[in-house]
Length: 318
Length: 303
Image (cartoon, rainbow over all chains, first blue to last red):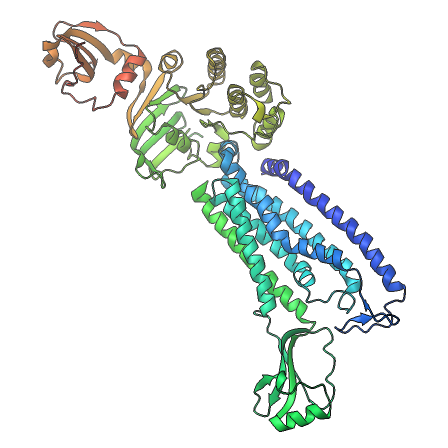
């Protein structure tokens, strides 16, 4: 078994090196831009800003005041793309390269069983993937924290933060690896395996983004307020874009039936139409972790399922 | 190790196998026993099932039916893996590994490893250790693959067309080296080859496969002794029927040339020759149904 791990490391050390180098670059970028961000925060420019969702403006010119979070979003995008990158460049060739060259026959004719051949390389790849993706998610969290959930920073529900941080990044990377590994075993050519992996991991990544957007797995809550007084600010909640008026029977109606700000005009209009309250639907900030754990369970479960399928197919394919 | 079959190199009982994709049976009802200490030639035409049989013996495939034992062990078990080496026809190696890396891999992957002989085989081929496998000529690659197979000190060495891409000089050298190893360490070797004349010099057992079935599994010397090439008048063909097994016969004009497996004394007026192994093997590899007792009716047109 030690020998198979030696071979696995000998074959994966280049990929591991590239991954580590990419991470070091990411850390360097994070350190540079984060310190710039902290300087901006300490300059006192943002002291008058509320944390709410509205833009913070400069007191003198009235222009919007924002932290430079673009580079942070790039890191988030990279984390979101991680399952695709790892699946295509690490998972697909993991067994696929040997299958294409026929070298698994040479390895298996040496003192290695098919089980050892698979476990050694998959375990090594999974360990490195976990470490690299965990660190990438950690770097994002460290960089994001000072700017988190501020009007001039990055809210928790921004794609980059919601899908590019936390445990789901690790689960997604492992899913990419498992999908690539299975497709590498099934396809006879590495290139075909890579293309299939790109398709599968890409589609699933987009599908999960869509479930976030549609609030499919984490339904929003309904917040109700009387129409007479200004409603409490939405704060860090992620609006579902659905808001309006409620009748006494509980029917939800379009806000355009009474398109007025809080005040007498609105009150009169509401009374005339029989509305008793206003509502909006949104996910509270605490739902960040609900999204995270649901994604982690879905991706981790799929990764486990694909790994089991690979093990079962190993006997027939190798 | 000390089971009843321990001295048997290869033993098959009702062995069958078919590929799911290709359909059809690659091997069926194979029954044979290759005793220990032999150098066995596995002979058959293309597609006869030679590679399939070697892959089964090497544990890369699992039998569809029946059973196969290598040195008394089930192929693919850790006991068999430690004692059997297989060199497949395509001789796959990692193209980006250097020769030194490849030998180091052999050392890491096997419980026992004979570095000296592995390095000697490579050195005899004048192959630089720092060269990448992908840059080597096919012949040199074969040599490295062979070093990898021999380095694990197998008790049974399975070679699938090992010499196909070697030049005649290298072929002689490698064969001589193999024979020396085999004699020194008592390795069992099973090799498939199409180069029949070479087999006569090195092999003492033959396995003949035809269309997935075993036609012969016999000692070479016994095979040569029991067969005869007869040349005589064509009208005597009837004297052979019944008593002897006619493997192959050919009439040209009024003259009959016949390869027979002799059972008892010959009747009739025949010129008798002891066949070479090659002649016997070709006789058995010819299409048709040799082995039947009726004289074959294939007639060569007289030019």
